[in-house]
Image 1 (spheres, rainbow, N blue to C red):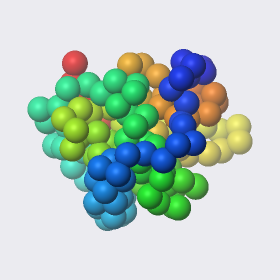
Image 2: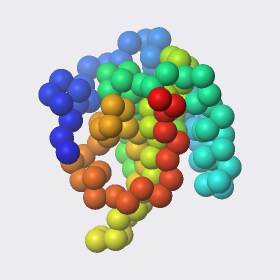
Image 3: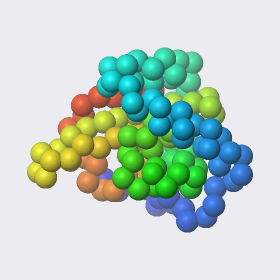
Image 4: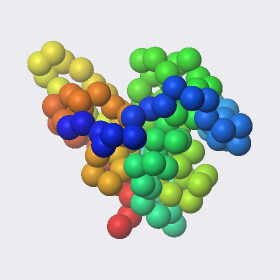
Amino acid sequence: MSMPIGLQSSHTRPPLPHRIAARAVVPVAGLLIRLSPYHLSQVLSWLRFGARPASQAQALAARDAVVAVSVRCAGQGCLQRSVATAALCRLWGVWPDWCTGVRTEPFRAHAWVEAEGQPVGEPDDTHLFILAMTVPARR
């Protein structure tokens, strides 16, 4: 699955208000990922209450802002990146589908967000993961 042209992460700096908001949610996401999977999904389910589904553009803007302000989220911190992206979207009144999954060949676990049925800012191999837990947007 490839992302539509024009929605890949840009190399331009996100707007200042997006970066400020991302700086607020990244540490919160760092605390949330320490919860058990059950409690994390419960908190995220509560957070999504009242939010509209996020568009690809909204989710990508949130992901870009999170990656711009956090070295961990820009690297291998997929769980914190996905939680922070979802939380930032929620500040904007929208919610992406938050997903975690595993694959066996080679074994790997991953967390990401989706919008409009597509992974946001992820490599083309995301479809190889078997979903383990999701907190979808309410349709």
